[in-house]
Image (cartoon, rainbow, N blue to C red):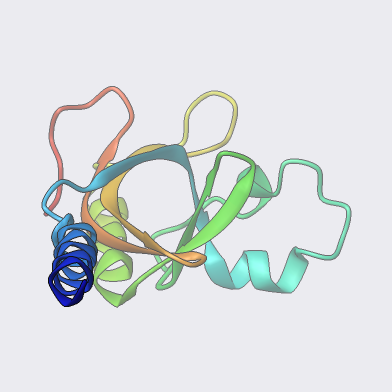
Amino acid sequence: MKIVITVGIAMGLAAGLGFAIDRDDPDMFHGQLMDASCYNQNQTSDTGKIWVTCAPKDSTTSFAIHTDGRIRMLDAAGNSKAQTAVQQNMLKRDPNGDMPVVIDGWRQGDTIQVEGIRARGSQVSLH
């Protein structure tokens, strides 16, 4: 009986470690890049497509992404990468007024740890 319990505990721990280590491949988040400060100031007002109202500018320093009907903030590294990409014109507004992007990273709550960012339809990513 003790052997069965010991083996069961060992298998449970091994399975738990397998889930904890499975961070090799980042997720892809498709959405519209936003100025997070603008969003924080306007999220309670009726602004319709807030991702258009709060599309980032060259001066933006904190970013979020509208993806899957939710707003997710970018981490510090993601803010830096997004700011560089916007300032270098790698990311631009489309005819609808929004800024479509693809972000490679990992979600932690309402924040995304960013590994890379690129314009939707582009193969050039800023890592």
